[in-house]
Length: 475
Image (cartoon, rainbow, N blue to C red):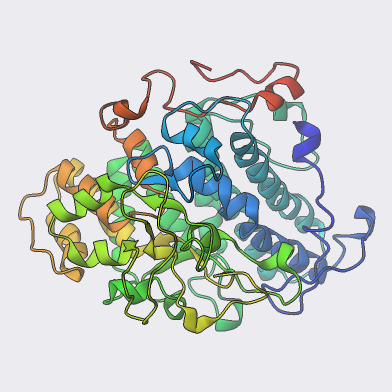
């Protein structure tokens, strides 16, 4: 594991040009000892962190599989027999030796290594002091983000804090220690991040992105007073709900007033392995735009219907035969695995008017990580626990999609609103685990209490550590 985590990733990581902030044309290999001498070297290392965010390992298959298929809102979809192994995640038959569980682990640690390269090496470079602080803060924020994904999936994990990693890198920390580390990283990053960035630097982390992620961390930690205070601050900030729920997810509204953080997926012509995201392609209409995986479930459709939520259902679920507001007829295939009427995640839909760049559907579509609507719903939940006003932030989200107000919302009201607002955005499964509802909601799919609250540590990593990594219960 140690050898894997501290690998420098020369080709993808540090040796990229700085032609434009988020463009990554490859150059010749440079020995590590010749790197990290100039501000330009530091900028290349920072670019590498962001570039890796849109890679297959971070924002495509394992991210979507582990974060959505085990829930009640998404199934594998696609054609029968295409990737049938993925059904193991839907019925909780996945094992500690499966590739996606390993790739989720290793990809996040590769990303953490890129952050640690900056955190460890940039302080020693003679360069502008303010720029240096900002770069280190960006790396610290992204490191926290990757550990946030790891702790939700595996519980306490090894905390790699620098390069080269020391022997502590083979030892798991507790879940609480991992959450502590994430929170401390975010609090350390916030003061040195900018409030805003110019258009030429869009996609770089801001102070608001770090505060938004911290609010989500505080929600998971059930630190409701701090969570309420922080989300109140964000609500008073420069954000608002974008008025049109359909257009919110189209490329024109990337980094609109609702966005706190997105993975920027700017394409670099001819460099698909470095720059093109397959987040949309894997989910897009099969036989027409993409692969047709991650299909919304009947349960999700029924939840929209029960709430009278016409607007969000139409945006989130595209059925075969639908015509989008952009004029695309959803055709796809006649038979999909697991559903009677073929359907697809409408939030991953990119209108055909944008064309296909280098033959890849949706490769320029950003991956939305944190939206203002999420902050409002976190604020509502924190307010419920602290005796504050939960109705106002909740009803602000509901009003956008023409739903009536709820005067005295319960926790169930707030959780259901999260389900409908964030459907198809890789939050539902983690919310079910966080709120303790997974055991009841997912029991019919095979969820076992005492085992499936966490994914297993990949068996190859346990073996690579000489069995120093302790496996999760039940695995």
